[in-house]
Every structure is written in structure tokens, then in C-alpha cells.
Image (tube, rainbow, N blue to C red; front, side, top):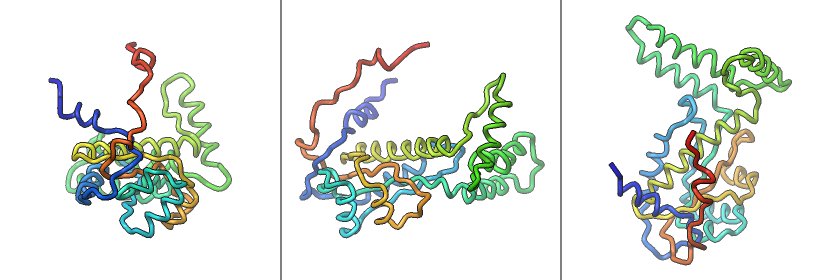
Amino acid sequence: MYNQIFENIIQKRRSVRIYDTNAPFDESVVKRALDRAVLSPNSSNMQLWEFYWVKSKETKEALEMACMGQSAAKTANQLVVFVTRQDKWKERVQWNLANLNKQFAGKELTKKDKRALEYYQKLMPLVYRNDPFGLNTILRNIIVFFMGFNKPFLRISNHADQRVMCHKSCALAAQTFMLSLAAEGYDTCPMEGFDSNLVKKILKLPAAAEINMIVACGIGTPEGIYSERLRVPNEEVIFEV
């Protein structure tokens, strides 16, 4: 059945670059949107993300400068910074294993249960582990070459592959966040134009953290939508195979 409510949310969400700084802003909508964002699909339930809800005036002003004075950053009521934390993979592996052990406590393990445990005990370390000499990358490349020579195989071998995987998951969370705000009548703008090193310094993030995007939030003004929504024709991007 056609869902008009969801259609309205999709049509409502636009990248709005100027906000009404005098309009009332209910912070609870951001809290609900963040709570929903953590429910987003993510690779292997590793949740290698962090969301920084910028509420202090000082931090927001600093981020405005880091965003190079963009109107969306300057006029937004609040900003939310979406961050990838690939470096936390060991913590997330242990967290998933602890939850699995709770689920399996007091029962005889099935083959499916054992595979789930091995997934985090063996596969996740193989996928995420890195070392200063690149030995783990070499090992992954060898495994991918031989195991994938004549059959389908997961081709994640280097740090770049890992980064892409983490950023995809984080971007899904950001989209959930923006759709949630749209559902409650608020506007957003995902920004990529920022000094990532400066943002990390402002938020006191470790070197391994990476900024996925910064999302401006508020009540948009009509002039905040710079143009009509334009998209390449569907037949150029949607294919039936």
C-alpha cells in the first residue's frame, strides 16, 4: 500500500542552508532523532560511530569557523557532527561477544550459535586488525586472492576498504537522523565543506577518528532552499536487471 506519510517526509527533507534564528526550537526533537539514528543498519552491528550534539555556544561558534562560515552552520540552531571510530573495533567486538554469551547462557550451542561467536572471535579481527608494518593487510590480500580466485568472497583487504565500510554505516545513521527531523517539521543540511583537522581539534577527537559529515538543524527559511530539487533522469540511474 502506498504510504503517503513517508512520501511527505521524503519530499519535506531538503538541504536547507539558511535558518530562522528567531524561530522556537525544541531540543527534544534532536534527542529523539539521535535515539533513532543509533537504530540504523550498520556493518556487522559494530556501530563504529559517534554523534556529537553541539549545544554550547562556544563550540558552535568554533565549528562555524571550521565550516568556513557557511550559512547553514552560522544560522542553524544546533549542529550534530557524525564521526567514524574505526579504532574502536576491538571494543565493539567484545561488546557483541558479551551480548551473544548472554543470549547463549545455559543452552547447548547450535551450529548457528557457534558461527555467530566465531564471526566476532575470528572474522572481525581479520577484517579490522592493522599493524604498523602492514602485515595484516598483506595477509588479507593473500586470503582474498586465493579464497576469491574461483568463488565469491568478501573483498575487504586494506585500510581504505575498512574506512569506506565505516563511513557507509555512519552515513546511514545521518540519513535516519535527517529523516527523523523532517518527520517532526524541522530542516537539516548535511555539510562536507569543513576543515576536518580543525573539527577534530575542537571536539578533542583522537587522530584515528574521522568526520563523516556535520548536519545543521533548525527551522529553515524560504531563501534557505537555493533552487528547485533537480535530479538526473531516473532512467539514467535506475536499472532493472
